[in-house]
Image 1 (cartoon, rainbow, N blue to C red):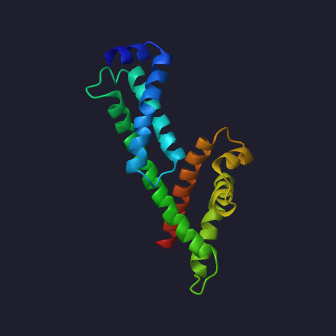
Image 2: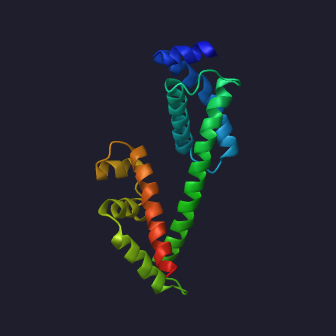
Length: 178
């Protein structure tokens, strides 16, 4: 185990690739079992993040030896990321369910909330407005949004969407609580 860490520390990326391929099935198995609400894309993103942190911990000298298995170590790192993703998705779904409820006329349609949603959106920067509208109203994929807004990857758009949703929630709650 220590030899693997030493080789990775010394720049042997083939060793890192071996670890990546060896641990991935165990991670995917764990994540799909304990985080069934996440898509396979979200789980794979968490795995990539866990492997990046694994590599960075070695390069920074934080990880010099492992008391457990490599799989257990990477899964523990990834578990934190999976929990964060689950919380973000739950938060976003709650906001968007409320948003959708207020965006379409119903018998108990509340125009004050509708105007608050539109007001909060109007105060957001153009990028967030466009991203949220493309995702929630036009049902575009992250890849399509990345292309339309000129971002390199869908992962960049995911991160930006999370920040935009947080801004929307803060703005909505600020107005709602006044």
